[in-house]
Amino acid sequence: MKNILTLSILIIAFACGTQKPIQQKEVTLETTKEDTITYELIVLDSGFETWYITNSKPSWYHSQDYYENWNQQYANAWNHQSIWKRNSQLLEGQINYDVQTDYGLEINHKLFYYFQYVEKKLGIPIIANGPNAI
Image (cartoon, rainbow, N blue to C red):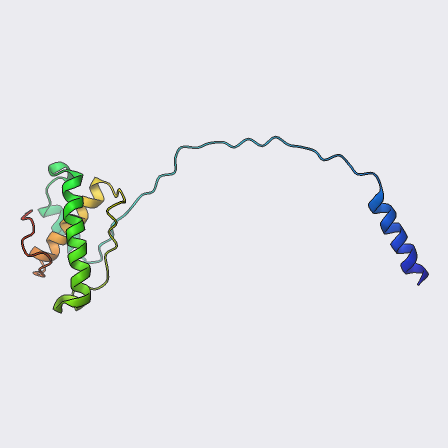
């Protein structure tokens, strides 16, 4: 009991001792260039890359707005068909194409030609009167 009382007195005395002044450090934040997000389109169909290289026009052939407009229509039609139509087993999965996101000209161009590949090469209709890009 004496040991506990002695230990308690020592702890209280130590805790009440003089406190060291708090040292303040100046923190400076380095600002870096704005973070950039990059997007990549990965197509798992092994025949697409060769078809894309041989059949696509240069990305600057149409404006980014042109590709975005068609990609939005194609993605909506794709998602609708993958859920409700007979091609649902062929058009597997949803395409999360966000019109508010700037994917850049190259990604929009490649995605546009992927839809063309599905329609022209694979023979799966997505949009009834879509563009004739090739």
